[in-house]
Length: 154
Image (cartoon, rainbow, N blue to C red; front, side, top):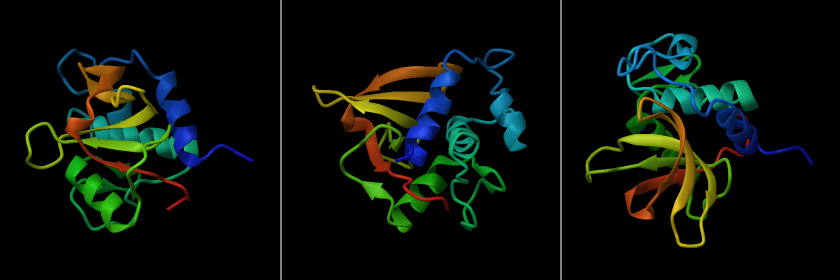
């Protein structure tokens, strides 16, 4: 059995840990150049890159939301809405699931890819645009707005 799209996207994401914005603080990255919109917040662009390049899945393909392009999505609230509306929201995070964070109770703020749930209830993730780079993080579930699972090409 081959790896799920999420696991393939996770493997792609982990290959880029340590890639930084250049210049620092500019939001300019190889991922933004690939997407066609550079110099903007890029966490959802990074997830789009990992799913497209790693798994052949275009996030939000055909979805009529803000920030959707031919290669995926740049806007976290659109990503969250798409995951919910298309039945991809899950409660039990697994490696390769998309995680959407909400820091302040408003619109979703940030996205990453689940590495694994931890025994203490936190989530190990890999995220673009985290400290101006791709990095591994450990996050509290209190900040999770939703988890989304990509199980088939869309």
